[in-house]
Image 1 (cartoon, rainbow, N blue to C red):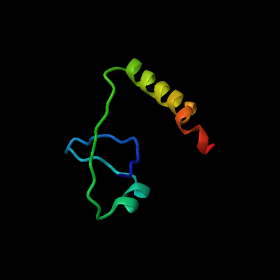
Image 2: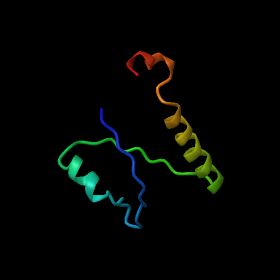
Image 3: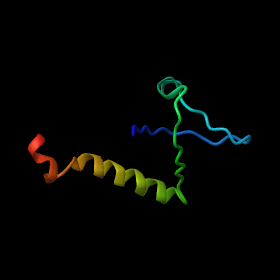
Image 4: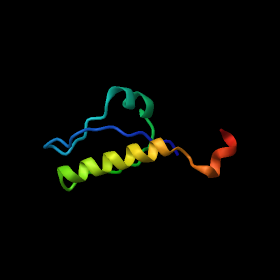
Length: 67
């Protein structure tokens, strides 16, 4: 399964704008949509920092033989 993440807003009519680059990649495909939103501004900062830290850690020792 492929995945992509982007930021958007839910419009008052319930639609979500998908960026053009993403639309061209998934046009005609069936997709699964997961909505994530912060409970507070502090929550947003914590999620973003955790994501950055996880990315910078890499795959860990379990995949070290591929490095």
